[in-house]
Image (cartoon, rainbow, N blue to C red):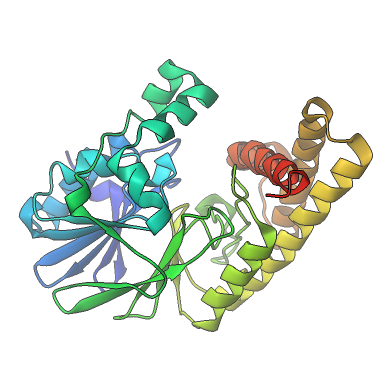
Length: 324
C-alpha cells in the first residue's frame, strides 16, 4: 500500500494517517515517533489497521518498535481497530481510561450496542467487529497517569463531557494535547483562509454539558499551541477555538431545553425538533465563520454530526429526566 497520500507530518515527530472512515480527512490515527520507537493514538476502525501498519513501515518503524496504543475513548471510530492492531504489534501495550479497560478486554457489549443501532450488516461494513485485547497488555490511564517511550512522556487528563471514559493526552515534548472528541470537531472543508472552525460533539450517549465545559477550561488552562482532534487532526489558534466551543456548548444546552419545552418528551416529536435545531445552529455558526460553501454543501459536510449531535442531546435530556 502506498500510504504517502494518506499520511501527513505535523512536526515534532507527530504524523496523521487518514483512517479511511466515512470520507477522506474525517477520522485520524495519530502516530508519535521518538528515536526508533512509536506510539499510536486512536486506531480508527478495523479497516484502518493496514493503513497504520503501512504508515509505520514508511517511517521505518517495525511492528516490534511500537510501545503503546493509546485510546482517547472506546467509541468504535476511535478504538474499533485496537484489538486487531494489537495482534500485529507484539511489544505494544494498550492504554485507556479506567472505564474503558473492560470494554477492550471484552468488546462484546460495545459490538452488541453497535449492531443494535446499525444492524449487523451495516455495523460490519462500517466498523468491523472488534476483537478482545489480552488484559495483561492493558494499562489503565487515570487522571495524571503518565506513560513513556524513548524518553518521551504522554500524560493522561480525565476529560469527560463527550464520554465518561474519555482521556486527553498531553505530550510533554511539545505541550500539545491529543483531544479525541472532547475539543470538538473541525473539518478542513470548513476552514476559511486558514482559520479553522470547530464545533462540539454531543454524540450519544454520555454528553454532559457541565462536564464538557470543565474539560474545555482545563485544556485551555494548559495553553497548548496546538491540539490534535480525531476529526480532523492538528489545529492551532486554540484560545479562539476553545472560546467558540464553550459558547456553542451553551447553545446546545439551550437548544435541547427549548425543544423539550416546545415538543414535550416524546422522542417521536422531540428528536426531529432537535435535528432541525442542530441543523440551523451548525449551518449558522459555519456561515458566521465565513464559510463560502452553499447551505446544501455545508449540510452535506456536517450531516452525520447533525444527526448524532441531535441524538446525543435527546439522550442527555432523557438521562437528566431520570436523574442520571
